[in-house]
Image 1: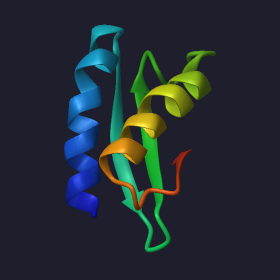
Image 2: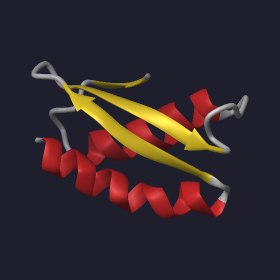
Image 3: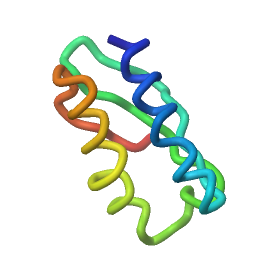
Length: 73
């Protein structure tokens, strides 16, 4: 599952990089929790929770149905 999550993140990455940010996969747990670290401009952005929920988590759940939730670390 980790490889599929990484592939899905690679699809999201260009949009984040266009705004000066990025996302790094930290861990995928056995129970479907994906832990990511927002980087660059995304790290301190007040909109980062919205980006995480409406962007990263939405795409990951579409691409990898086993994903239960995404958590920032």
